[in-house]
Structures are given as C-alpha cells and as structure tokens.
Image 1 (cartoon, rainbow, N blue to C red):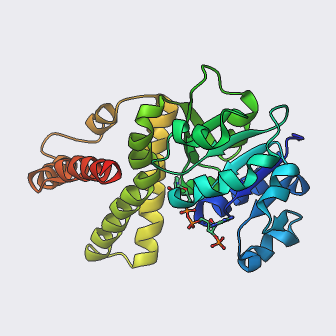
Image 2 (image 1 turned 90 degrees about the horizontal axis):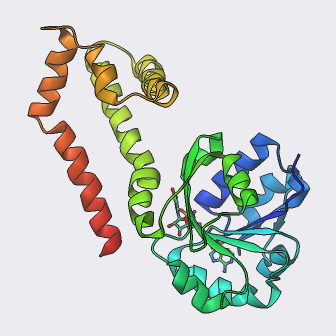
Length: 263
Ligand SMILES: NC(=O)c1ccc[n+]([C@@H]2O[C@H](COP(=O)([O-])OP(=O)(O)OC[C@H]3O[C@@H](n4cnc5c(N)ncnc54)[C@H](OP(=O)(O)O)[C@@H]3O)[C@@H](O)[C@H]2O)c1
C-alpha cells in the first residue's frame, strides 16, 4: 500500500475513470485520494468509498502530493493560476492531462515552481488497462508518477512533441477500436448470431488478438500468417476488406484526427 496522496482536479469522464482504476487497484488508500469538480453531486458514490470529494481545488492541493489536472484544455490554465499559491516545491508534482496545452504554457503560469508532466491515459484506466504516455521536460520522471499511472495500466515515456500523436493513437484509439468491434458484431449478427452472443465472441477475440501481440511481442502480420490458409476463408475475407479500403481508412482516419488536434 502506497502512502502517496493524490488529487484529481476535474472529476469528469477521464478523472472518474482514473479514480475507479485507482480504487480497484487498491494500492492507494481511498482516504488518500481527493477528487474535485464544481458540481460534486454526481461524485457522491465515491464519497461512500472513502474518497475525499470536494469542490475546493486549493484544499485538494494542500491535502495531496501528486496533483492530476483532468480538466478541459480551456480550463487548465485558470485552475493552475487558482492553485498556484498552494503549490509547495518540497511536496508537489503536477500532471496535466489536457490535450494541446504544452509544458511551456503550463510553466508560464506556475513559473517552474514544482515539477510538471503531461500525461495521456485513456478511459480503459477504469478497468486497469490504460496505456499512459508521459512526457516531461526533465530527463527523469519521478517513479511515484509512473507508479500512480501504472496502477491503472501501463506507462510509456515519450517526447512532448509526440503528445498529440499519443492522444490520437492512445486516447482516440479507444473509440477507433470500439468502432471496429461494433462492426465485427454487426457482421456476426448478419451471419447468424444474436447480438449478445456476437459481442461475447468478438470481445474475447479482440482481447485475445491483443494479448497475442502483448505477450509474444510479435508483429501482427506474423500472427495473421498463422491464420491465413492458402485459398482459405480468412484470406478471402481479409482481401475483400482491403479491396474496400480497410487499412487505408484507418490510416487516413488517424492522420485526419491528428490534423484536427493541430488545427
Ligand atoms: N476522455 C478521454 O479519453 C481523454 C483521454 C486523455 C486525455 N483527455 C483530456 O482530459 C481532459 C478531461 O477530459 P474529460 O473527457 O474528462 O472532460 P470532462 O468530462 O468535461 O471533465 C472535466 C471536468 O472538469 C470539471 N471542472 C471544470 N471546471 C473546473 C474547475 N474550475 N475546478 C474543478 N473542476 C472543474 C468539470 O465538472 P464541473 O463542471 O462540475 O466543474 C468536468 O467534470 C481534457 O483536457 C482531455 O483533453 C481525455
């Protein structure tokens, strides 16, 4: 059990997903976690778990060591200005999850008073399966920051210039993967399964495909070769998908999504 105290400032979609992951992992005591938002009524379920649920960001900072800013990009600088007087260089580290707001912009407000990182997790944090890309303007990331995000999945350190790419691949990627799964289910219904059974088969198949890559460390095509019997139904299906632009649609979608962040 770790004794680090964590504040999640901005208990919306992502803030709540992270909190659920932290609670499920049980490495942090609920009493050592604080979550804020202005309207806290929808967070009452967490209060019952022993988490501190408050609307006061400054108080949350005072009570914590790691401050996770799970705020919209247009709110983060204002809230940073609000909590600035409470930041203690001997104690605090900040992690901003806001897309498109650079470490330099964040430091303009806090004047390098405490270490600041950017992190890009995804909503799979809720089930302990997030990938969190972390960028820092110092060489080393304090292990307690990595520990915090490893308790909701895996972490990877990246250059800050790749943060937008991380947003598309890791955070938007959840939606891309889910749309792929939905399409598989729709196909499954057309070939005879009811939707519930099709979902059960597809969910586990996709989880299994990812596990093959994660656990064996192989390239996808290596595993595909094992499934594609010459003249068999798999290669026929795959090639039909490719003739209809499957890989191309995904790659174009990813690059368009990236363009949209940078616009
Ligand atoms: N969703 C994702 O998958 C994902 C992944 C990676 C990164 N991100 C980034 O994470 C950030 C949050 O995204 P989200 O989807 O979680 O947004 P969200 O659901 O809108 O959550 C933001 C929360 O901030 C609260 N808030 C607003 N002003 C506040 C203030 N002054 N003090 C305290 N809380 C305040 C809001 O609640 P009240 O209005 O009640 O205060 C709201 O619940 C964004 O910058 C996004 O780019 C999202």
